[in-house]
Image (cartoon, rainbow, N blue to C red; front, side, top):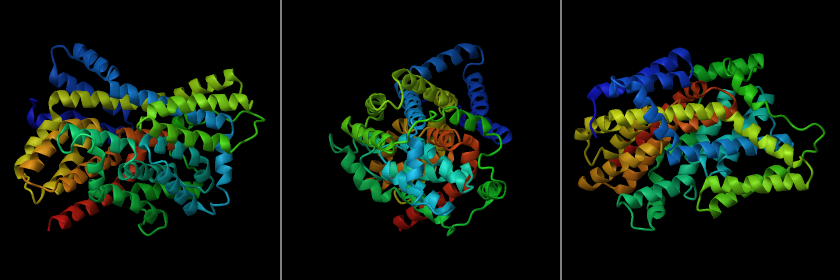
Length: 453
């Protein structure tokens, strides 16, 4: 793939500068994409924009994300409308005695919904907003706890969408024999240091062993002193989340929350860890359940499904803009440029650390955690084999980089969805979480250095 050298960094730098200046994501992403399109095709930018936009919207992976996220919004809307979400939060009252225990329960819930990080972020964030609000917890703090449990736990437990996806990639790139991709993935789990450290840091922050500082400290002070849990500038997200309310007079039923969640996990496993198939079946069974129990009429149920999908329009718009930026960066050869620039400095001894830092940078710059590794993994495999490196360690470093990119980038899918579910903007979430992601990244780097001794 041809690239323009250091000029390939310009669109991403435009996005970062505008995001910091405006504290908003979608405008920055669109501006960066437009700059990149002008760089690629100054004579016909509109034609290229059309082509890139169509390529994004017709991409199978993008369509999957849109359907999964939109239908998760529909399922959550049904749980709210029927009073099931209220019943669930009420059931937690005997376990929660204060702010720290509320956040700790949030962390524990994330451990159980490990099958997919999208499911984890959307379900746990939506379920715990009201609970953490009661104890004057900022939405930024809630977002941090949810996000730092979602992807890391999905990475570490090998019966998740991450394991299935990366297991297949390992087979495709000759790093595992046919049918052995997940087993090779499992062997690499001890070396996925960032995922382990990010998940472990969360309870340490909750219980004050790691102090709050910077933007997160300010957010928590605002919530505790004024009771304003929703950060200024995120009111539109809160309005979208509150646009669906419990049906008056409905009798809250805890099982109407528990059964759909269990069904979603069970059917996702049944369909070979395909979350979209799991959501289709779970939605159908949930509608049948609530209609039979006369909680909602069929018309009310389907209206709620549509309304729930609507609540996901804004985060989906941000994700589509992020996918467009990735498409533009691919056209500029950003990934190839970064790898080529750093490849001469890689040796067998520093390869895991170099992969973590380099691939983490690529994942952060592109906002892509899975798609970019389809391009990167063949290069990583070739480097590892040529340098006779420990491939379990190399694979672990690669997955660590993906998890870090998911956390640190303010326009990654995980950041955007967690922010929506928790009730703050993607930038507010990423900005307050970034110091803790960097702490985990620093410890991870030290860990790879020690493993190389």
